[in-house]
Length: 111
Image 1 (cartoon, rainbow, N blue to C red):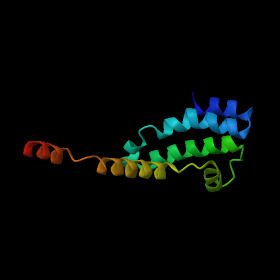
Image 2 (cartoon, one colour; image 1 turned 90 degrees about the vertical axis):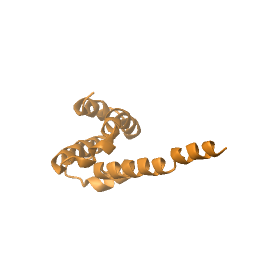
Image 3 (cartoon, rainbow, N blue to C red; image 1 turned 45 degrees about the vertical axis):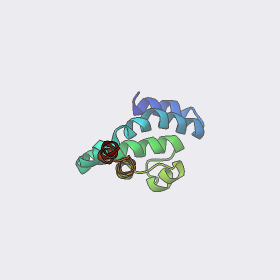
Image 4 (cartoon, helix red, strand yellow; image 1 turned 60 degrees about the vertical axis):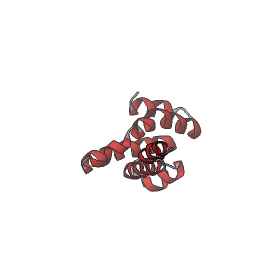
């Protein structure tokens, strides 16, 4: 389902329903594997940001001329680059908290 389809559905909905639709359909696609986007050129990241901005404006029914930062904050959404950074930090933290496999093998060998 594309952005234009979501825009049509959101136009007929209240903001809560529109936010749910946008998050579940389009925003989840933007967030999928976003840690792989870390080496994309700025032009590609800019395009993804434009899609997110358009989606956010659709959800809150704002004009294109409205500033996007307050809209994103009201929806509790991060910018694309911030999402990528967050995901990388989250994965790094989770990985660092895993038990060290080599230490586990050595402890078994000693017993």
